Length: 219
Length: 249
Image 1 (cartoon, rainbow over the protein chains, first blue to last red):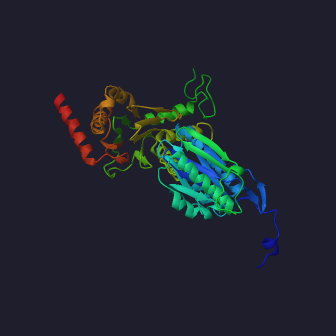
Image 2: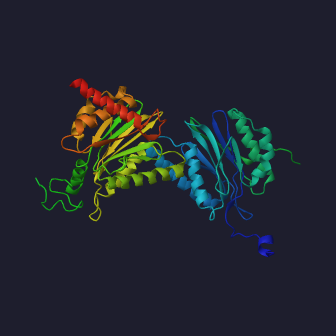
Image 3: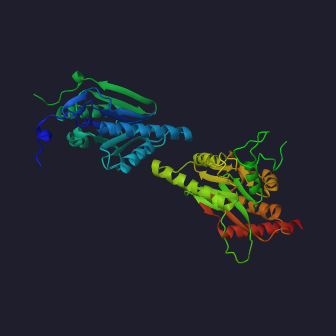
């Protein structure tokens, strides 16, 4: 049925969604994760400098896309459990463990949630790992993953430019340009590019501000 | 000093004036009434042996199990009230499975031991549920960390051991175990040594009926899986023990 409100009027009571672009890529020494910074409610940007790179544990991060409320609560549950387990076991949690915990929450509550997560990080057992957890609650380990509304514009770019075992510099360029391009093309993504490099030494966070974003083809 | 039946021993919710909880101590006595179980932590795995008294010739061999598997990689041997032991093993299996479902990793033995310990402790707090009348030995083998053996008593204390015995003959068994060089022993040797301790030292042929040996192991040879020791090996061990006896005569 044709809904006038839905189709034409801006609905500011709409659920807050992170219409988003997020990327995670493994490289030689670990993983690099990157995201845009727009959180929108309908067409209003609730936050234009959002931090979508959410820490789950010291060297495990997650990238959140979909409903902001859903992804926030789940990542805080997983963060709680990884912390509890690592204390109980006396050892650093693996990215695999955290990712599988995400999967339990996402799958068991799939009818209530609208959340997709990319879980990425470094652990001494598997090195850098990226796990993709799309909408239904499945889990897939991948060398790189993209997510969010802007990721649709990056499939071609990623397929053509990804290489295994990139250096940190190459990998950083790969994600930065990717997010930049998605921000340019996707209405749901915008703002700045936030990055984090996770390797055996820990986490290094970087930001690329709007005016420093490389301009690709545009008139 | 308070003795038996002086009123402080009715419920686990009462301390005696000298700081003891008698109900928990009585639970220990229930363990001491049962036949002996031994666990040895060797260089390549953990071996359990239980002296099972055959109460009747009508009983099927291998019935009345005293060793159990939890997950594939952990073994538990019980002494005391077998039914209580089975209850705790049931809980252990739940814990192991939930952990695996949630994290996609197998549960580490020290995590399982701690959780079982907490579980057993709960039953020492209230007056409407009694403490468990059984002790458990929990063993596992990991490629990286090596073998591990823990023992949980009715008071919920969980300690790590190189060699442990629970039940009626635990004192004599522990004396024999302390003479063994466990760090140099393989699991195959341990099967023989445990058989020797159970048959010769612990089991009193004049007083008790026939016994059956129930043995299990989790070691390098079983690739970290908890399994019953093959019947052939047990028979060989029993032969070896008989041979030793003849030598001494």
